[in-house]
Image 1: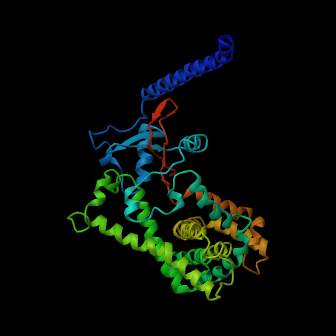
Image 2 (image 1 turned 90 degrees about the vertical axis):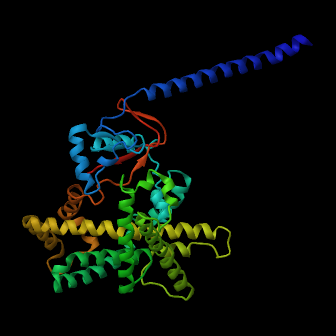
Image 3 (image 1 turned 30 degrees about the vertical axis):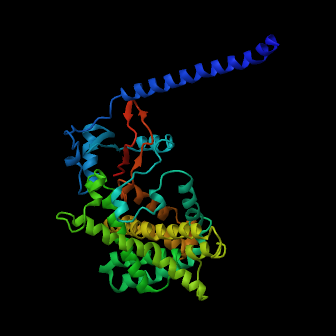
Length: 408
C-alpha cells in the first residue's frame, strides 16, 4: 500500500518542487531585470534644480520652437523633469516611430491631468487609457468617419464650398473667419445634422474655447495643479486662484458641448425632424435599442462622446490647416498657378472641382500632404505615458514618464 502511494504521488511532488524552483528563478530574474533597468542612465537633458527640476525651464510660448532649439544641444531624445514628473521629448521621426509603433504596448497610455477633471474635459476617448473601454468608444467614431462612409457627406461639402466662395468674393479680407465657418459648418452638419447657420457659429465658438483650454492644460508646466493635485481643493475665491475660476467656466462650456447638441438631435428625432443628409448622431441613435433597454444608457454615452469629440477637435485643427494652405499658396504664386492648371484640366474650366475629381488631381493632393510636413497644427501632440519602467536605446524611461513628440 505504501509503495503504491509513493509511486502515485512521487511524480506530483517532483512537479511541484520543479514549479517552485522555476517560480523562484523567475522572481529572481524579474528583480534582477528591474535592478538592471534602474541602473541605466536617463536620457540627456538640461541640469535640474532640487525639487523644481526643470519646471522653470519649460517654455510656455511657442514651446515647440524652444524644444527644437534644446534638442540641438541635448539630442533627439531629451529628459526633463517638473516637480518630480519625468518628461521625455522625442525630436525625430525615427525616435517617434520606434517608441509609438514598435513599443506601443508600453507607451500607449495617456497622462492623468487633474486640471482636465476640474474642466470636466476628461470624457474624450482621446484621453482614455488604452484598453477595452478606449476601444469601445473609438470603434463607432472611426466607423462613421472611415473612407467608405465619408462619400455620404460629399453633398454637404459641395453646398458649403459655394457659401465659402461667395464670402471670399464679397469680403476677401475676412478669409480666416470664412474658412473657420466653412469647416465648422461641415463638421456640425456631419456630427449633428444642424443646418442653422447661427447655431453652428455658436457651436464653433464653443469648440474654439475648448481646444484652446485643452492645449494649455496639456502643456507641461502651464498648470501646477497637474504636478500638485491637492491644489484642486483650493476654493475659487482664494487669492491667486483665478485659474480655478477659468477652469469652472470651461467646465460649463464642456457640459454644453457634450450634452446640449446631442439632446437637441434626440428631441428633433422624437418630433420627426431630420436633416437632409445623415449625421453621426442620427446614425448612432437609429441603431440603438428602445429607450427603456438596459444597455441604452451606455450606448447613448458612447454616442454622445463620439459626436462631441468629432466637432470639438476637428473644428479647430482643420481651420488651422486650411488657413496655412492659403497663406502658403499666397507666398508661392507659381505653385498656385500649377495647381489651377491641373484643376482646369480636370474640370474643363467650366465648373468647380468636386470630391469625385480627386483622382484626377495628383498635384493638388500632393500640395495638401506637403502642407502637413510644412505646417503642423499640433506640433507637440498629446503626451503618451510609459506604463512601466522601460529600456530604450540604453536609457531608462521610468514608469509614469510623459512621452511627447515634437514634430516641428
